[in-house]
Image 1 (cartoon, rainbow, N blue to C red):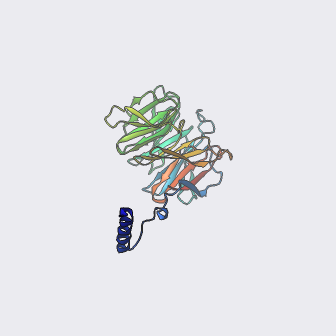
Image 2: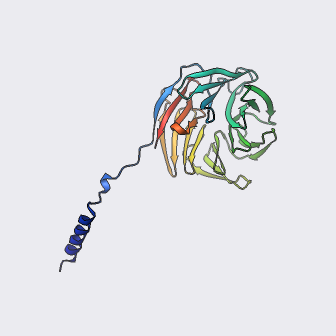
Image 3: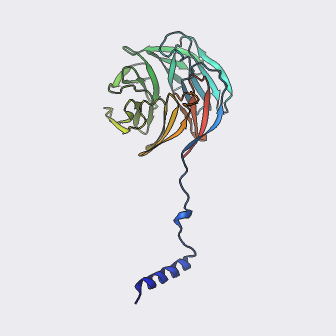
Amino acid sequence: MNYSFLLAAAASVILGCTGGTQNNDTAEAPATPELTLSWKTDTVFTGSESTLYDPATDIIYVTNGNTKAGEKDNDGFISIVNTDGTIRELKWVEGDLHAPKGMALLDGKLYVTDIDAVKIIDVSSAAIEKTVTIDSAVFLNDLATDGKQLYFSDSRTGKIYSMTTDGNYTVISTTNANVNGLEYHNGHLYALDGEGLKKFSDDGNYAQETINTEVTGGDGLVVLNDSTFVASRWHGEIFLIQGGETTVILDTQAEKSNTADIGFVPGKNLIIVPTFLKNEVATYELTY
């Protein structure tokens, strides 16, 4: 007896009773990761280095004055941009700013790194209320918060610091050559440095684990979830990191358009890109 025939016939009856067949070819394929330009400002900025979205007010902060990124020349300023790309206030805060870079919001204050100091700006009055000078700092760069304290990087010394809101700071890691982008998510600090993307332990010891070695020398970092990240390289590349997969989703090197410290608008899935020497801010809709 042909058992194969009987099994095939039985399968046919079962599928007929269930009203259809399975066809893997018709299954929906995962979306190809990509960025689609949403809007771009005019060239009104000066060395636009970092962007930060404030969900409470639905605005974007932009740090400027980085054409001489290590000089104390007092030409720095912070802009406010609406999420449709219109400029709300080009020089919202200026004066006593040299080359402001990374930003973080905490309890009504905007914390900004500025070469060898952290400037604390009162958002309601748009005034710098305190300057915390960091001993032995050379080139402070990105800044992040866990909702209680701040973290910031020094790209030239390879150090990462933590700081309380009253300005007390300490070094938490020293072995991060060319460290730049920082972000905090779900109990863990993440950093981009010369070795790649690092994740730090949540036990207060900040033991580090390199979880991606393809995006080395990264600049800006966005954490979408525990295994999905968007990272930029300053010279014009943005990557989507999903588990073990790394995909280039933007390459503007040919246009000599930089991709510095990126930000993110979660409700609209927008990646905010300061173009540095191009003196623009652009946003791209992320699909993946």
